Image (cartoon, rainbow, N blue to C red):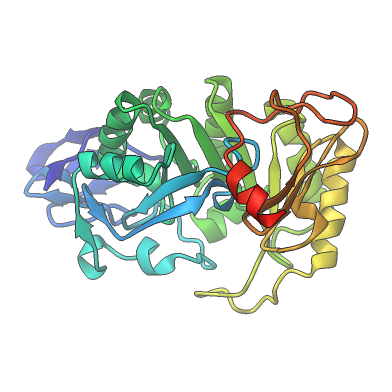
Length: 347
């Protein structure tokens, strides 16, 4: 077991965890809300340290990150637990149970970094379950990855306290943050968290120079109103700027949330148009393979720049310095295009 950081010891072997806004006060034997941290005889332990439940070499577009090292692969790893209780979670088998109930492999940070290098992955992604509750293993692996010339990606709900986030920022290169809804009431009643904390942390990451993209899962009847999406788009522009990508993702019923149908494509198209009309330059549709909403278009001349099918790039119309081939507009894509070999095979 690995002792946790960001906690306080109290009387009678009671501890208080200070990693996320839950600030769980735990008696001996109790787990935190995240089910990843446990009071063992007055000491808080990170029960998931080095315990991996899934590992895969994913396209970076799957995170989804469309404007960061396009066409690259990223070694994706996960553990167990989450500090949110989303009833529609697609990875609920690993996010809603403690590690003791989930098949896993025990590894060291060095193993993860060596594996990423073996697969020629320029980055490691901490994903599938909530990575920020895996804090101790995260920061140890990220530090080593940086030393070995690799980059770090988090796919996260953004729910963490400010001090631990600031300590982690220097090691994060890119992040996709899920914004589950744009109403505080939805967060408190259904997701069991606070929207204002998530928005604060997204802003902190952006200001620190982390490449940020956001995802909004559109759930019929819950967060798909025109007003809500307009408000989110306005916040997006004011806080992150018009060039920060927003991914509107299609919902499919699963886990405990099966009363709603899959999001109609027409709803996604309508909300995408609204977000674009508000002033966002890059609004993408997720879980809609083959739809034009997966593509990147030049905000100046309107030409197709990147054509995608799912997580694959099948057409590329940008110069080496990421400018539109048709009008020269600079497109805010960071890193390199890694898809030349695969693209040439497709074409």
